[in-house]
Image (tube, rainbow, N blue to C red; front, side, top):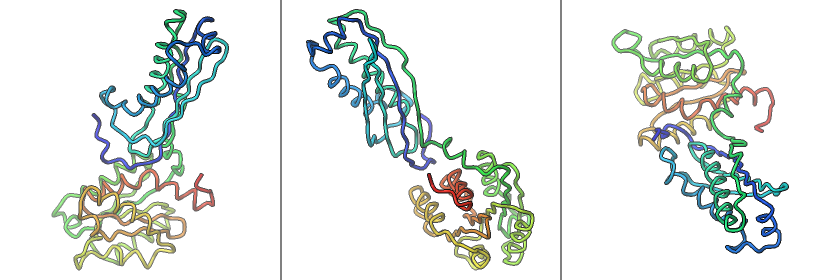
Length: 302
């Protein structure tokens, strides 16, 4: 089973379809309410809802998930019964398989209820109609030609005593989000050097600046103190999100003093210096945070 522990929970929906073709005898029994086993729509709807809830117990690589809602609609078009099943969840992975399996089970149950009456039955057109809420929905928010600067704050790495991993992890995550124009710097924990580099990035039109390191509690951890006076707007919710995400994975996340905000229309993020802390912060924020550029331009959160 694929590891999804790094993902965040989002509202996700999926709608699937299955079509049952029936003969005249079955359609007549449905219309006259003379199906021997009972109301075919009510019984098959129950089966479909149970299938959605139990998909992970049947499909090996499906993750168990909470289903917040399941809707099943039937449309009779001639001798076709069109089943549309929608699933809603707030979870780390999509619910399209639950929707497909639920719609299929609904159709199979209808088939079972009607087969004593009519052998002219066929299940067809099983397919996913729509899914929403996954990563692909947020990738579209990426600003075209977005340029980024990644700054590694570390006395030991800048002196060549250690190798950088956190900065490279950030660069890798940005590339996954189609941000390819990235400037990469390593500097010591010096306030003036950091501020000068941020100002240079602003002069060069950089719209995303990410630092890693210097957010701890030692006397040399001065990244927040260096960046906070430069911000036009501080956005506390961004770091609240990263710390909440991290706290579910390590009890030490609460000790990070990362900050985030805007300098004009440039987003500045100060992330932890540990590789794990930087990587988890990126997983918590990207690609979702990139919606900020549309908010800056006055677009609503639709």
